[in-house]
Amino acid sequence: MKRENNMSQQDPNLDAKLTTSAQRQVADTVRALPEETVSLAWRSALNERLAPIAAKKVRVRRVGWLWKPTAGLAMAGALAVAVMFRIAPSPTISSVSVSSGVEANLVAFHQQSEVAYDVAGPGLANPDAIEKTTGKNTEPNWTEDDLSSL
Image (cartoon, rainbow, N blue to C red; front, top):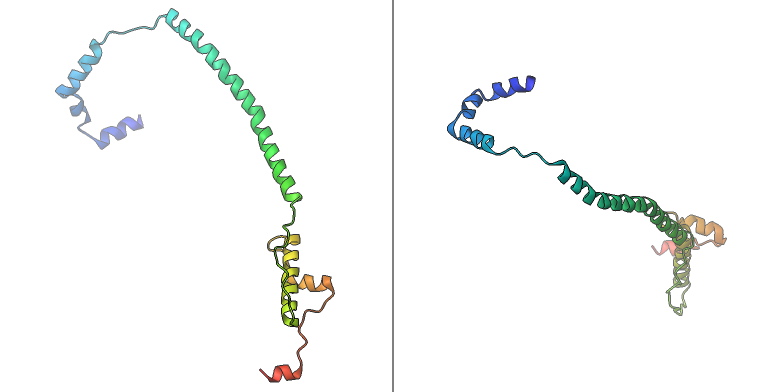
């Protein structure tokens, strides 16, 4: 009821537009169309043709209801196994003859940090933890002569 009131308030000429000759002609054409009733025999034949198709769709839905979660669980399990038993990549650092102590310390520190990253994962490798676990003091031994040269 409110809707009808709102429509008449929005367009006061709505009744006038519906009484135009074009609108009357369309109304007469629709009234002149024959009224067809669907026979029960035709509807019954249609239902018989559609019943096997509907049964097939129900079977497909049931199979999908079973196999889709099963496939999802299998994929999640495979991912969990891949993450839990991740094979560490072999080191690709070629052996370089290092004669200087500074260079050897840099290479050793890099190798230790790579191992810590492989073990702990991204964001968890802590260089301080590497020092404590190796027992080595990686701090440089600065002397007064080294500092005075700066």
